[in-house]
Length: 296
Image 1 (cartoon, helix red, strand yellow):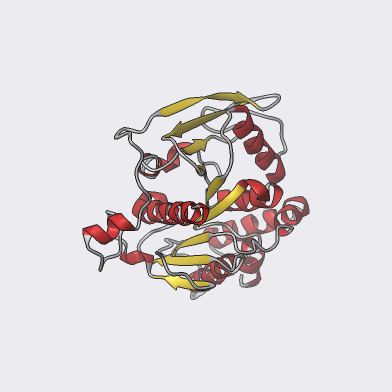
Image 2: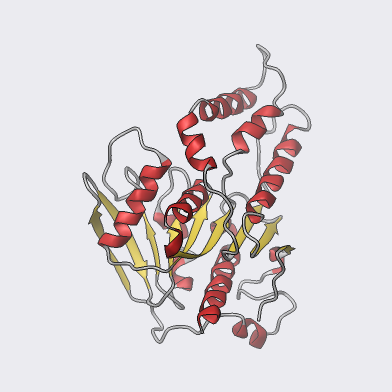
């Protein structure tokens, strides 16, 4: 049994490639994971689902329930989970997809809102007959999509994993620590300033994302990457301020549920699923085991 308090920070950087804690024996590692399915090579299914005026591409592997749904970050596609999906598929069905206009999915109408993307995913899952319950996994901006999905379709979701997830307040809080604008400021500082401002000028997206409230006692894992490689030509101390803000925002995400775990990696950059896929795999399997145990 995995002990859990209302909120705690686990040193997930101690996880090894086999998915266990550094101090665990091989038997202890095996006991912390749900039983694998009978297939040694997970079955897979891929295709396109019509969600209205366009089609979305999806790829599922494995069998079982709850189904794990993988959501990529901004501008990214389902293939970003290629190190995670086949491993999780040994234990249950796990599906990734390409959002509209990305990868193998069709282009769609513009502009699009976050709620549009969440509605697309809901229609995709229904059209592909991928039935709930779901454990949702979102990286970066995909984490905000998964939070919004949980808010819109709470009865379908039994667990949530946020992988270095974006936070609705990140742009606003980072912008607040920028120094006053000067004509000779660095190219990187100018980029950050314009990036933060462009987001803050879109109130529709912000209000959409700020509406979701507490997750109650929904099982939640927040994975945070703290080895961020930022621009070297920023003013002294600004990188450190950005990192501190990021950590604080990640802690706030973990507090959304009274049943949460927060893991901080000092090794990974933003793409934990690439740098330390074993952390993401173990987080998903932990939730899978917890959800299945609760249903016994």
